[in-house]
Amino acid sequence: MAASNASSFLFSLLIALLLFASMQLFRTQLSSSQPLTIAGGFMGSLVFVSLLTAVSNFEMNLFGQNFQARVFPEVVTCLFISMICCAFVHRVCVTTGMIFSLIALYYLNRISTTIHGTTTGSTTNYVTQKKQK
Image 1: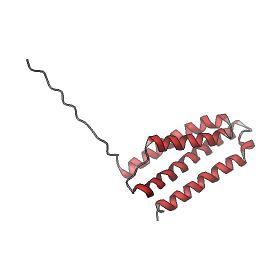
Image 2: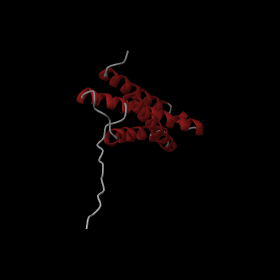
Image 3: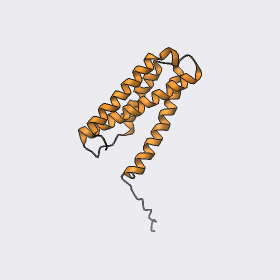
């Protein structure tokens, strides 16, 4: 059974906060070696995904079921916040977190398009006409 928007918002916000707290708790270990720094970037991308889920569910709860998260400001803001979380750990975490977050965003968009169909946008058909002399 699927969770409601309000409960999903709370769960994903709690997950984001727990991930951020664990990144801060294990800051020295995550910045000690190269593979762990990459793992810190992956944890930052998980913060991004859970923050984006929380923001999207909050907006769907507030504005209605058909509301969709846009690239600006929702995605950019969540990406910026997750990159700040990564920057508290290590500079390389920011780079790897950005890469993992963009990959996760691509797959989230792909899954969303598969499940909910294509987005409805305005299409304009341009018809060229020959000038008559």
